[in-house]
Length: 488
Image (cartoon, rainbow, N blue to C red; front, side, top):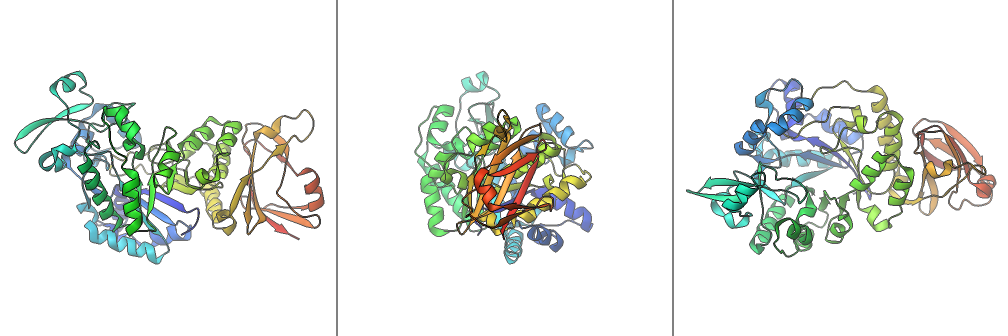
């Protein structure tokens, strides 16, 4: 497994729908065409995350079809939407069994084996915070669910619901985070009940026998301090014991946390291999180089375990959030710093319409040839061994007295076996800028060749000159370069 792997996220429903249209018959997970898996492998992806693999029910689908607040977003995501294509959220899970429509567990096993033969590993979802409205625990284990009251239901109808199951009616809380109303297709799990901890750990163990890692949805919601703030109930920590058990039986298993609110480091300490770096995404979106630089000065142990991304199913498409040269600059930063590099289906082709996980398919869009060509270069560059090495952020000095543009540059070095071997430079600004970038120890004689993997431009510089002042950069607005460094 690479030190800094690349992960490809695809919506399972949409993926199988597109394969089925192409094949002219229903396609299940075991029958994904070889050409698609070969292409993922050829692009260097180490991990595949087919989102939404587990069984869902009619209750969730009905909520999605009837919820007026969601309809506008569905129509934006799929302008020619038909009602039957609203299939419900894959995070309203009724059972951690592979969805019947996807071929069941046997089909998933075949997919995993096919990926393994290509050197790729399989990542699946784990949703620890909530279950579907029609989950069997409403009948068999109501004590696992967050209970409510008639008073709470009357006062907060957006956060509570009455469910009839097993011949009686009970009031439960919708799953939610502390800052928003509940998700009306889910029921909140009650982690103040220690028996639930054991049940959820066993579910996680069963998942671990079917894949190579999990992406844990909203993992920070079941940290004790967050849970108590949201629900007023104390709970013992869940993640350390669960992670320890999983790692004992599956040492190479990856735990990836969707995480927010500055709780990433805490989740890393509780056993997660990687945590989402939404803060870097937000700082890139703000387009302020000083904010990005400050974030990237965090200690190596944190950087090493961060998930870097420019889009996922919760964010706008990168082609709209980071248009044109801004997107290329943001990608050069996001994917050429340490961590797990996440790419979303459609991102590499420049898709602009944000898909909805509630729908069976996403809109068909033409490929943007410039974006596609850029990402092909990015993925080829990431195959270079040096970008699994040692990274550091570099200092930039003014090109001349009174020139303030050095603060707009983000420059990184990568070293292999202790030797400076790659340089990333980004003018993260909407104006042309100049600076001198201070390079790592070079020696005292000879020349360096800088070969740009994004353009194939080649520059040769004298080492003595570089050691004296640094490398002079004069870069267009949002200009970015990924240089391999060769010694002469």
